[in-house]
Length: 437
Image (cartoon, rainbow, N blue to C red; front, side, top):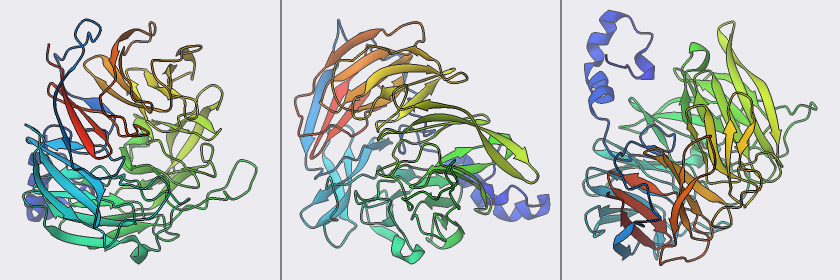
């Protein structure tokens, strides 16, 4: 069954005869591996199977280690034997391609005129690979399209064109979303909170205005603009929509035209809203740190639109995710909770009940970047340790841990597993571990 790009969903059958190339692109060009932020489906799940899941008896083996990625907290995307990431080099922020075989550099393209200046200097964006092109959002506030083959620039758009604005001064941190013939990103402007661009030309398709965020006590949030999250797709209430966490809260916009469908301020804080929302069916699980908390939203049809209703709210003591993200496996959410703590926790999504996690401190300290592979979770702690935990609500079952040889500060880059390889970015260094049984 062919799944049409969003812009063709409502066209009559005859009109579809003229968009065959776009349909072919949507159905045939999906790359294998880890093509974007949080993996193939933006849910933190690796499709890899039959990997070593007993690190106590057989810790992962370091296969190779390379330098030259520059300063940055970006993770990596891996497609067709090539690795893509971003980093600050001597002449500006660059997108870098490496061989997945040995880490040798294939090309490097500087995409900013100078090194962007902001708190915690360095790159953030994980490139999104789509066929012959990749897309990235440099931390200075722009979106760039490059050729995968040689890194040459196809087009670039500055967020100033859309009145771009960040909620605070730590640099744009988004990884763009490619959906059909469009690429989506979040300038955070009043009239262009989210924009959809033609992925081939960069031309504007539509822009979604910033919602009129109103807090439960009837006030406007003190922070607006883009947050530090990335867009995800939801089909909640039977309507395809793009969901994003911004400075003022969470919003959902109609995928076909950018119409704002709903907004929610409960998890917004005044400093930095970071975790990527987790959509599932008609639900959206959202969280934020800085003493905020978490919530489950239910999406329901309302007239021709959609409304979001809070099902429950968990206070910061019970569940807040600073950054490092959350992974849903079955009926449960797994992540590190606590602001800058990363205490491992399992939450039952429907009820918000903490299944396990009370009193568990884990093997490392600081926030934990989390992903799922082959029935297990990989926690990468800010302090360096990488831990394997069984993804089960039955109990906390740690299956081993190791500490990489390179720790240069805060280990914030998310781990990535493709096939039997585990990739760990640490500032200028990339390490590749073998997970084969």
